[in-house]
Structure formats: structure tokens, C-alpha cells
Amino acid sequence: MVITEERDIQKLLADFISRVRWVKPELRGKDLKNLGIPPGPHYNLIFKRLLEARIKGEIKTREEELELVKREFMDKMVEQ
Image (tube, rainbow, N blue to C red):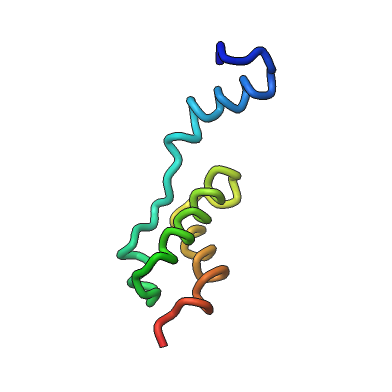
């Protein structure tokens, strides 16, 4: 935080150091596979979305992660 004197940037850095860097989705690849989503590069997209939702406070629980995946990804990626 010594790098800048701008308070907004200092607040963002402090938030990252104290909170954001520890945030991780609870779901794993095996959970997506159990939902019927075939393994592939789109797992990365799903995990990035889960991380973003966690950081923004849109979701807080494993169950909410599952609902987000079902709502935003299931119809596009379920094995035929």
C-alpha cells in the first residue's frame, strides 16, 4: 500500500490482502462431473464465474454454487 497514496487503491489492496486472496469456490471438478457436465476447458470458465460470484458476495454457500452452475451452465454443457 506504500506504492500509492490514492485511498481507493489502498482500500482495494487492503481488501485483497485481507480477504479476496483466500476466497475459493467449494465445488470441485468431481462435483461438476457428478452434475453431468463433461470434463473440459469449460470447467475453467465455470470456476472463474464461481470465484467472481463469491468475491462479489452473490453466493456464500456450496448450495448456492450448485444453483449458480445449474442456472448458468447446465443447459449448455450437459452430456447428450
